[in-house]
Image (cartoon, rainbow, N blue to C red):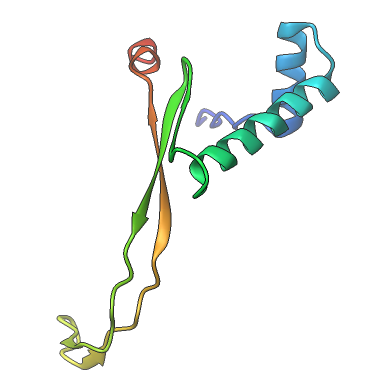
Length: 107
């Protein structure tokens, strides 16, 4: 028989595990996570530094990707039919990279 794949923790299981480890209530843990999310949003927005480091876990950075003008005629290499490219709007790209200590722990 094939081995069943492990499933990722759900939010409620994650909160329950943290509550058990820290001896806090699930409601308190949920409040801490909400505050963490708000802090990350604030720091990565235009008003923040654009970088956040969560100690022992990860580093998040935001980069602005410029808009790309469309309207260029190109040829599809598979079907050889011409098509016109579309405009791509500018957007913010969030990049998350693990801290070195976490990488080493997972080896």
